[in-house]
Amino acid sequence: MDFENKDLQNDSFTEEVSLDSVSDETADCAAESTEAGAPRPLLEVKHLRKTFPLKTNLFGKVTQELVAVDDVSFVLNEGETLGIVGESGCGKTTLGRTILKLYPSNGGEIIFDGKDITNYKKSEMRSIRTDMQIIFQDPYSSLPPRSTVGDILSEPVLVHGIVPKEQVRDYVLDLMDKCGLRDYYYERYPHEFSGGQRQRICIARALSVNPKLVICDEPVSALDVSIQAQIINLLKELQRSLGLTYLFISHDLSVVKFISDKIGVMYLGSMMEFGRKEDIFGNPLHPYTKALFSAIPNPNPDVKMNRIVLKGDIPSPANPPKGCRFHTRCPHATERCKTEVPVYREYESGHFAACHLLEGDAQTEAEEYQENQD
Ligand SMILES: Nc1ncnc2c1ncn2[C@@H]1O[C@H](COP(=O)(O)OP(=O)(O)O)[C@@H](O)[C@H]1O
Ligand code: SF4
Ligand SMILES: [Mg+2]
Image (cartoon, rainbow, N blue to C red; front, top):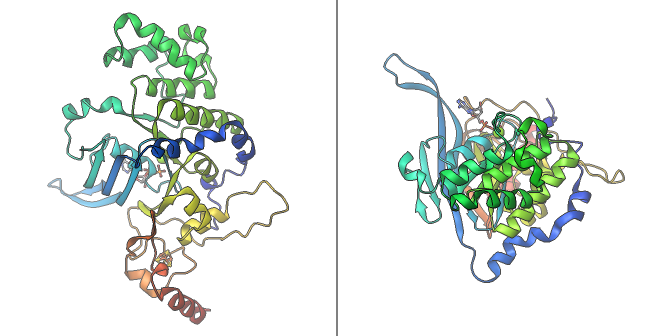
């Protein structure tokens, strides 16, 4: 298979022009929020690991497991958007759910808003549950069909006592307005709406409890391209007005490029590269990142694409390659890559990558190795 993964190459998404034209000033949201002082970390993930058991023996001991998230570390500052990108199955959703503690982790630490929540029990999570919310990919299945929009949005506000009971209706109507939902939708049911409107309802529901962090798991992947742009702009506008922090998961690099301040590139459960958007796009370090970028469709037909075609299929996460996980598909792989796991290092301020090629004389060694192979 060449690098034809449809998930990562939504060829029809070349909406940067229209996206850019709508609300680019919001991209500076994080920068503005930090001008007054140093950026404040809202979420710190350190060496996070999440495995799923595949086989157990007679005594219930796990004999085979799938490592969905392996040694992932990053810092997400308040008011920023971190885009997590990678092919389907690389562990993006698992990462988001583990951070939210919907899945228990198997190693590492999660520091949220200054608190180490790694070992928080359900009862302890209740105190911060409203601070972390999630928006799912599928706005069709994530809304209860028999409740009106008003009820759907009022319920969390009532349960968590966000405002006094008599103010709930006004609070919800105001929230609906912020999310671009007309007031008469209050009495309507989810099935009466299109995918884009439903996703607005899901966004309003997530925001109804005043969260600090919103994990957006492929929030526009199920929507038409024109609607994607509207929802992304809504998310940006809400971030600016409410000071939200986003972990934005997507397989679509064009969307991630548009919305993110920082980007993390994942492959088979591991973070391959992480950094500020400008650094990741201006100076991609990792061969996998370079291959992904080379596959982004260019709206200008006169620009020739120098696409890097990756060989082979994505290996199974249940049986990942030894050494560098990417070595079975990497055009620069050497013998060392087959046995030695590359260290995830900071190569310029805030710009991390895991690749032997980036270390000292490794580039020359790799070139010599490739020449000998040819
Ligand atoms: N509940 C689960 N039980 C077992 N395996 C899972 C479960 N959830 C995800 N996985 C596996 O973990 C890997 C990562 O999945 P996922 O996080 O959904 O990837 P992505 O969101 O990047 O597509 C995949 O191989 C998937 O099959
Ligand atoms: S460590 Fe080796 S196989 Fe892995 S990305 Fe770098 S050159 Fe490629
Ligand atoms: Mg997913």
